[in-house]
Length: 548
Image (cartoon, rainbow, N blue to C red; front, side):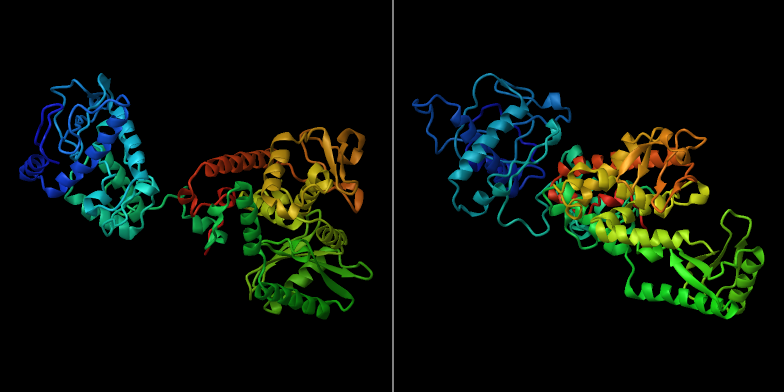
């Protein structure tokens, strides 16, 4: 910008002003053109404040004025007054083609620019073509002394912006735009605040740190496509209702984690190999599938649960466990088998050599098979059960709260909790809403119920009766820990299927944290513009899945 100074309120001939700016150090005709644009806005703003019906004191067409702003970086030092004097050190980048006299009295910088904005809006209503200068007459370049930034609505943007120019200060830059803007900034003068803001956007777009070197991604700020790969090529950000955004994300997440035909075939082949080996070892024994693989509620990393059942129920001793373990190794199905013979339910564990899938084999226990059939019935009769159960199971798995052996929630218990939630939900139970169309809201309410409101010390869950029960009224629900989860087994009322969930406090805390996180994210995204929403994930805030 030119260093040429003018006295306050001095009337300047356009040609003289342009020559003064172009002839000063660093000045050029472009500066003169820009100065003319801003002064035009100020002209009509002040004209609106003159008493109606009174003729102007001077002819309008051939008079000029200059509005000046102090270049001080401090906001309080940027005040523009009508009586000023020594504070006017720089000329704004435009000369007004019409004379304007500002209203008498002191005016802060914000008031001046408010008047300019009003004049700009009024002029926009009567705008017509007028060459390059007219096309850019609404652009007012503010010095950074008042901490303001350029605010231009869509109607005020230049129709023919220069190639590579970034007009929207709030727009996210592409790497190509950032590189171009970086080159443009090298030879331009601007305030410190504006320069810092632009540099911050450039470094973010180019993935640089504050020193201009490539920024290493922190573990707590991963790429959204790495932790939420199901959002790739999705347009959730266009949803006017954030609840619908979350609903759509849940459906896409379920599709993402659901098995492909190849995965299903590979898992079936594992079961077939084990079945053949068991048949050769014991002719009267059969292998049955239970657990999440049997109910189609398994996540990609889930194991396969098998049980060996015979007509006589005779394969229950330790000898049988080791016989099957050796047979599996000799058949090259696996290289190593872990025999857990002293557990309450003895099992053998191994990793399938072909697929790398973990397999657990138990003996002569019907409970798991019956439970699998029960869950299959629930899934057929309860809309939304599969989707919500898969999200909750994934949430717990990412926090290692899904292993019953370490006090976590097993798959059967999770399914019962989701089913109970849907059974007693007043709007779902009454048919007022369809769970399949409201997954986002229901997920948040699930976390609110079991993370904030559920009375674990007093209340138990009975999915068979679609109700709750008082724990003191059922001896089988008793636990030496008062703060415990009690879920009646729908196939055996004497069994509390969540008896081993002794890590309940951490589970409750995790559910409560998920509720807080999701509601906070929903409120935040609801206030964002579509541009800032783009590329974000609601479900990814609680489900961090890294794509290999």
